[in-house]
Figure 1 (cartoon, helix red, strand yellow):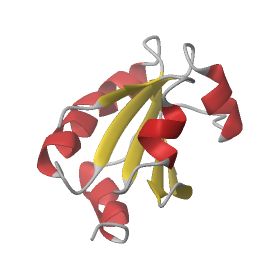
Figure 2: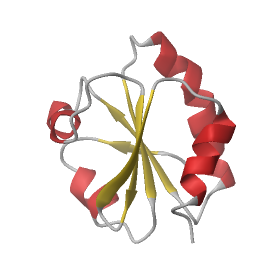
Figure 3: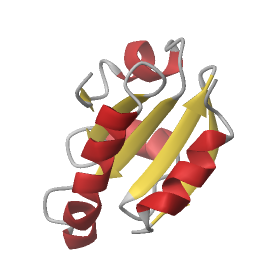
Figure 4: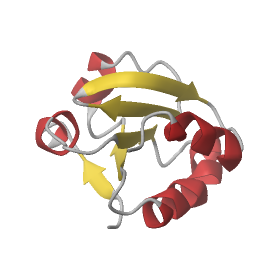
Length: 107
């Protein structure tokens, strides 16, 4: 499953109502660190297909969702399980650290 592109209209359906854990990448096209972490997000989407839904949300295009989850800096990654945010990662960190945080929430 490729990454799901989120907006204020589909956030509830794709993230809150998901029956599997969701990783949401809050980003913007003008953010250099966001571009640095983007390939890692793409890899996670492929490697965890079926176990994890990976979504990207452009904060400029979906300000309501960004505000709702108090995204003050990007890139920010939020892990959702059963519709609730359970983990927040801010900034560019190594893939291994992201994976170690995800492991706690995957089946």
